[in-house]
Image (cartoon, rainbow, N blue to C red; front, side, top):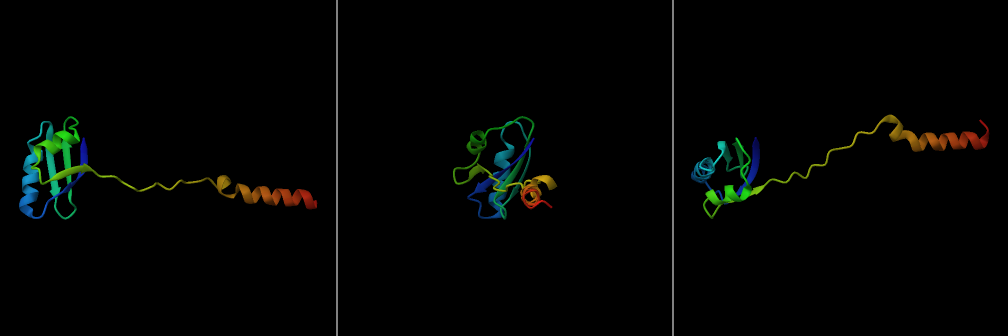
Length: 99
């Protein structure tokens, strides 16, 4: 399984290397990719490793946290769901006027 985390406290490429080596030392971690530009780390693990355990292997100046996605998926509506109010109004007007 692969998870992406936000890492704060990285200021240079040396920090990237330190974070990468520290995260690789955690149990069950198989691969790590760290980006200072994105302030993120992508961690591949054979078994789930908790956020607290990952924080424990990092130096105290680095903080790891879960990335929260605020994207809301748009709901797709069928034609009937979209136009049902208009169809009902048209039907009601037709019924009342005797068309």
